[in-house]
Image (tube, rainbow, N blue to C red; front, side):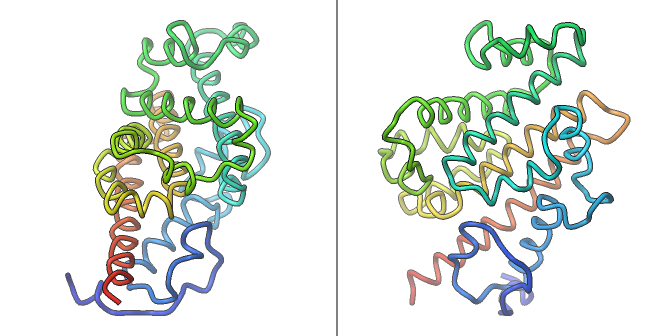
Length: 254
């Protein structure tokens, strides 16, 4: 480890979201930098000039309230899954309408998202999302369906969900839900999914952002490069997870 990462500093002076709030009060300089970066890029702290300005434009295009995407992190886990999936589905309709014909909007909106003839099948066939983003969307849809169609899941939490999965199920779930950023499934799966229990909502939010970002810039290549944008998000998520892994390791050693 380098000296900057080993140096210890206090908590950042702004609010955090689920998972980070439960972390120990001592964070490395890398954690400070990574957390600040994520807060700025996913919570709209740059205002109209934010790095996620494409999300603001997309929210307007699909009729979502201002800062809807950022505000997802303040939701409980059940609401996060339902609302996050609604955002994903509206985004898929937007992609197809822009690619095909605006007159098809009502028809496309009435189609299911999954299945062999659903919106995702058309999105994939037309190359509007890459395969990892489609895999994430399918995994998120499976999770959403299990949450919304079972009364016992009204109190759904990611922590309880992760704990309910056997080793193979957990490995499969993490592989698919992190498909936009595949390098991190193994980190989340370590220690029986300890990091996944603590930070799943943040990770899913970042993967949703990665999928939406990839699709947005594929559709609007003059506004940015989807590969570069996803690489930036990949680096931010990686820095956070490495930091969380170090925190968990220090907890076990203390």
